[in-house]
Amino acid sequence: MSLIIDGSNGLTFNNATTQASAGSVLQVVTAATSTAITTTSTTFVTTGFSASITPKFSTSKIIIFADFGDVGIQSSSNSQNGLGVAVYRNGSQVGANLASQWNYSYATGYWLGSGNICYQDSPATTSSTTYTFYYKVAGPNVTGYLFRDNTQGTIIIMEIAA
Image (cartoon, helix red, strand yellow):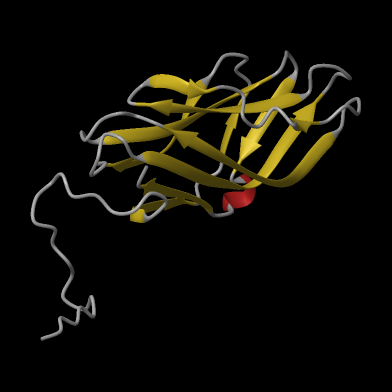
């Protein structure tokens, strides 16, 4: 006798300790926004852009991809013209200044481009986990923009079996 599983009705393991093979994608969560935001803060402030996932296993890795649409930096000085983005897990910073490569060094200039990051986390929990992005500019006289002109941004969070 053979057993055929086509996956059309889902698959349930015999108990919560049965885990998929290492490297398998266990679940994917997405979120999107198209609301333009700006900051002149030199300390991290929330973007309000977040998504939550409840890991199936405490040993899982969480991969976070984020696209911030059109990203801009406007400056009236020729120094400290960077824009930084950080990942916060449940209100605590876990990934610092991930987008510090978004720099512009032209006096009174304006830089515009696309902005995206990828971050891997190991939250070691099976409780609901919220990932929120924070951002800041590198110095005074700088304005940082995310989702400029209401371009769409997306978060993709994947749980990967360890």
